[in-house]
Image 1 (cartoon, rainbow, N blue to C red):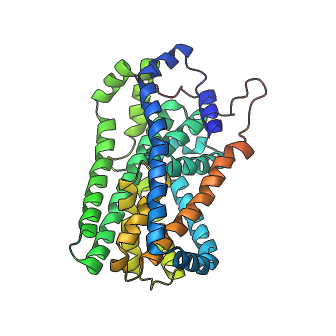
Image 2: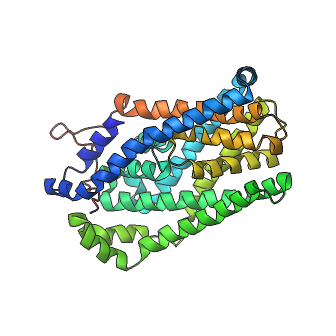
Image 3: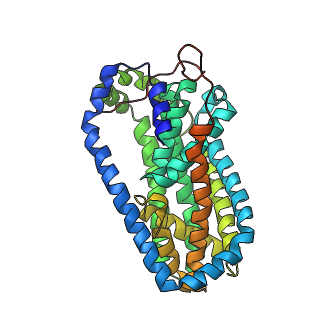
Length: 358
């Protein structure tokens, strides 16, 4: 993804070179993430290998091969999910959305999907990546505010969908650890969503940004004006993300049917809830490889199936995810933005430099 970082550097070329020094205190954080990411990745792969051995490689192979004919339908539903996510991003820009060409938004969505799947705290990293790519068209303050709004909307949608998932879990397992985890997950995400919005809209934020964010802090007023557009809850982008989660429930219904599990709405919601809890627990593991599979394996009894078939749902979901990760990774290589002849900077309204925090 080095091309993405290169484009980010170009979009912020208007900032002073001295601002790069202000990022020095964050170097140790980046180094820590660089070290921990492969460690967690290896841990996830090791966990997956252990579970495959325990569940039975031959049964897994038979189940996966039999499910392949239905995978194109899952990919098609995933395209619908990507459309919903891109729509949510566009809605987060409010009135400035018209400044972003549709092709640029689609390109940013593909790249952001790859980042979301592979980076720690993937959703936040994806929104930051999209903001960087769209900054030349809307300005740094608006792009950063839209990223924060989109992140808040995503958290809210994840919280809302967790409650019907918890109801489905209760119907299948009663007051089990799965049910409690889904309820807690829903409440935490909703509170986090409202907390992010309330914090960014606080009047003291502008003064803090002027003190801590160098020259970019001068644009705190524009940033807060963008964040404060609309109400405390960003309903429009949240509903778009909720549509994405609803399509994901459909994906799990198709995957369950593909591996030979009797797929019902309750079963699909329960599976979605398992995925969301695993996503929260394995946020530092790239692609949640091993974490999701382990969660599904533990819940095999509640799903009325074998561990091999339950794990197959997660493995097939990983394979579809890998297709879009590959597409997003190749996008900056094969799909270039338009450039001016003189500067090589993407065409669009002049943007503010991206924020640099001390």
